[in-house]
Amino acid sequence: MITHTPQDGFNGGRGLRAARKRRRRVRGFTLIEVMVALAITAIALVAGLKATAALTENAGRQDALVLAQLCADNQLIALRLARQLPGVGDSTNACEQAGRTFQVALRVRPTPNPNFRRVEATVIEQGLTVLHVSTIAGRN
Image 1 (spheres, rainbow, N blue to C red):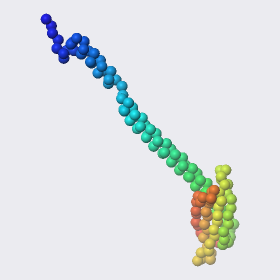
Image 2 (tube, one colour):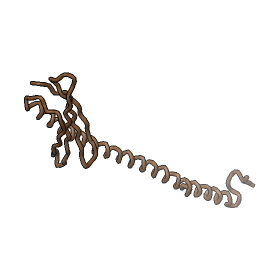
Image 3 (cartoon, rainbow, N blue to C red):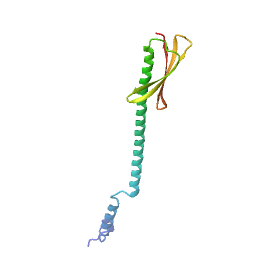
Image 4 (cartoon, one colour):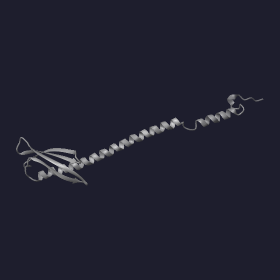
């Protein structure tokens, strides 16, 4: 007579049913595991979104800065091309670059040496100062 022990899995078919149940339990993820994975994914997506927004904002600021630099350079070069010592005082000129309108405020002040003037150009867009440049202009 052949006898089987419970370790053999032949105890009236109950061992096979228990093994099948155990296999079914380990096939999928639990709800908590899925929720944790979703939370980690959401945090990563939010971090990526913030980084993208920061890059977009920085690109916009850099664009405004480059255009403001062009406006300031244009005004300072115009002073040099006049081939005379700029008069002391303040003036404001409009400058359009790439479809955007800037205001360039020029401020000319005397220096201890009468052959030179200190020139400051402040570029403003929509009431906000974008750029401030300072230089010295002399007699030509």
